[in-house]
Length: 324
Ligand SMILES: Nc1ncnc2c1ncn2[C@@H]1O[C@H](COP(=O)(O)OP(=O)(O)OP(=O)(O)O)[C@@H](O)[C@H]1O
Ligand SMILES: [Mg+2]
Image (cartoon, rainbow, N blue to C red):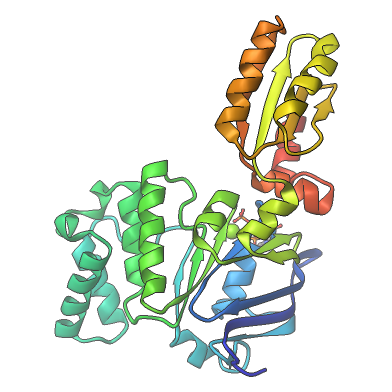
């Protein structure tokens, strides 16, 4: 396999843990200089894929190149060109942000002076200069993730793997991490980012691969993916089943497509483009008509919607929640 503009190429990757097939013929191509989203629910195989591509574990079948190098046969060369931020932070709580980065620099054999200079540069780039000399134990979630990103950038890798960089962060910290990722890519790094959030992949990635049970089930642009799912929807939940036909009629007037009625959940939903206009119109009309509305709102497509559309089933997490 040649480089040909791809930072990552994986074909038919297999990884088994006993009976469990964590990867089961997984394919992926990532164009150099882009952010690529690997989107999938809990247990889909995202971390396993990242571990194989970053040479932390061996594959059982298939082949993969990163920066044009074979992950199985040229693991050492691959390692010299990549950075990895794991699902769980690797920074030391007791040290300050600056001390952490200097320590990583020395681990990478930069030497004291260069390690200090690189740490200062990265603190600046990730907007951590003010907090540089505070202990990491006092950092917010977003600051820690940014420090994590900085630590994986010590040697300016060609390809950076980010495994769920914002899971567990509040919206503001999440936005800060997104900004940092954008800055990295502007600097020429290719990023493969795993996430469970469609919104995150949408905001950052130019292409998204959807993974389910160890296989790639879609590879598309964010817009392409959202279009398959049908974009934003207006959703009404009523108190009385007998009101459903009336609600369907009202919603149909503002919708871009056929409203769908879910009789068991007393819910009517339909795709809309003029989101706020549609919502206000439906709310007002239903009130005028005296329909008892339990809930009304706008819904952006979620990972779960993507799954339902692509696979006909919900994500396993949601199935479990529904059963509980
Ligand atoms: N070391 C291991 N031993 C046994 N099974 C494993 C191991 N690592 C992963 N698995 C299993 O392989 C499957 C894929 O796991 P993986 O961690 O790659 O998923 P993931 O997409 O990263 O999930 P999450 O979103 O929860 O991080 C899961 O069913 C998991 O339980
Ligand atoms: Mg994972």
